[in-house]
Length: 465
Image (cartoon, rainbow, N blue to C red; front, side, top):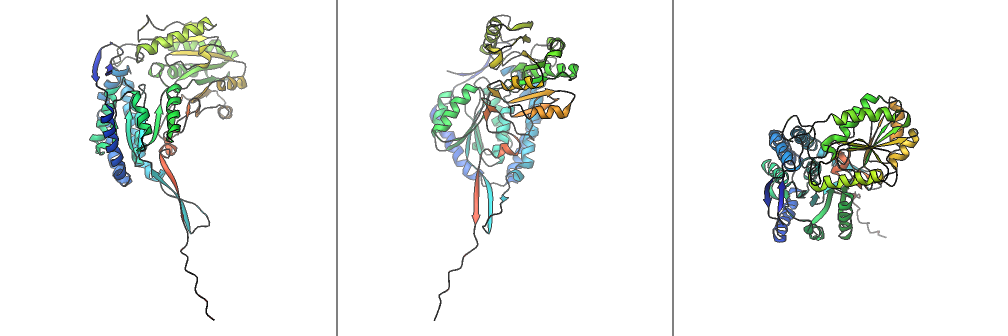
């Protein structure tokens, strides 16, 4: 079956690609493995020169890349340009800091000298999603390549043009061809890749189901893995919060990428005394978002990336309403199979509803009522996920204290959850394990080698009578 690039706004098939046969994939793997032996010996300065060039190309081609994201997965073109710029910033960040992050660490022991060295593993397989088709790849590729690894990318099948555009950027930047390759393959080639000794590690960003499958294979074949999976982030609004500010940010946090973000705010947990006022303000802000052609600069949110995603979200909403949830902002699909999904708000979200425990990957805000701050923390943690969360309050010290009690990889106080190259990114529970970004991210795919150097011992002299 062909790998198809389909415009979710128009339904037009843009381009089709024949999937690689295993013989093609195996040859690319052979080349990558050979390249890894050489690339690991290059200096950080050598790698950084090419990574800075990749950053420059991302900036130069930002409009072209944004257009690709618009037509392949429906991202508004202004958001696509911002994504390309963020990728460039991250490439520059690792070009600047990789050497310091991976410098030998001297350790005091009884040895004459002992240290921890950070050495590349080799070929890293990356299985990436469509929702941020550049950013998800760069946050793996920039640190991995700067660490001396090489990368093989299996991107989502609906964004093949984005995947090939990224490959071209790295090649045009001067990276040896085999150090970064896009594999146009079906999922049936993932296991043979992981079974091959030449693949040393795997990273996946995607659904919990996909993560579970890859984790099982990584365990079977004893490969290091990093998983960034789903999320149902809590957006906690305390009674003392500035509701105007909180509601405006809440709408932005829910509507980013048409709600198709792992760290988009999804569950809005609000103290009883202000829940009605907050919900009304949230409704006004979400209803004001403008949709349209993703290539139009005025468009604030586009279609969902595929018809089946919109159909699934509709079913989740319908099942939740059937079990007691209330619709206070009525949007959704115009008809089954439509990719456009207008914003919705559900209240009276209770255990037993899909809205309570499942991730809603689209522009549906779920409002839960909390008795007090402690109950808000309880509700936030009563989720299988633990990726991100935020707390809104005028008492910053209290906000920080509550943030430390939230079971998540990142919690923001009075700010929308976001990723940045300086801070580690990842989750707990069914949101995965391992970290991307920051110095922790670049150390995920290295051999943290202990080196122990003893003083030279002289042979014992013979005793004479």
